[in-house]
Image (cartoon, rainbow, N blue to C red; front, side, top):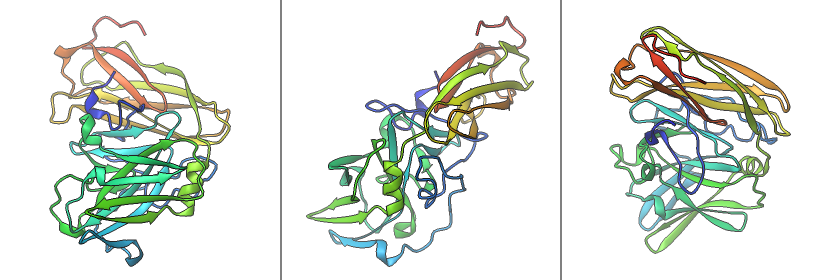
Length: 306
């Protein structure tokens, strides 16, 4: 399977990873209420231009000014890592709440929690699992607790993982800072998304040649079926190692809308130029809503059984 560097959230909860064209993908904040049936909203590019937080999102707590904005709930989240590769996190039976955070104080991840469904959910620190992510689900700047260079104008993000679906009449993000606390209520659209069912996908086939000449394109074809009861957005990625350059893999996003009960076939063409032939066979890993891997021999070697 692909290296643990790409793992965003692991250990006590499952995960999968994916990214578009060795670069950036993300779900734009504020889109979570468009599909309360559990289908995923369209993707958008993260906003990299700092904008002032609305007064309604600002709190004074423990002598610090803190703003929590762009609170969304997602059945699966995308991320972009510092080195350029990133992925999609889509563990079965789980979902996420993500929010942007700005503050003139140094905050830590363990100061944040999410109260929902009668439980308190701790914030997730992706750094615990070897992934230094720049953005998650359109919330850029790195995880809360990492060094900031832009003061209160520098965005950070906080992430919570919850059961899915989760019905709750009230949900709020809580910050304990010093001897004081502050709260930010989840918008209605986010609570509706938490309660919505998720699509479910089965892998029908993953077709990859057993060998390829280095520098020639590697064709990949993947077919999945939405076995859930709701229409949904299938997200996964093919990770291809590129150890000859600074980043250690190239990630290709597979992003398809699939109606309940329908199947879809996605095709990719992967560049093999920057993969070291001496490390053959190379493992192509698919992670996301489905997981699989195939070994490929470079330089026209003996095909590997699939």
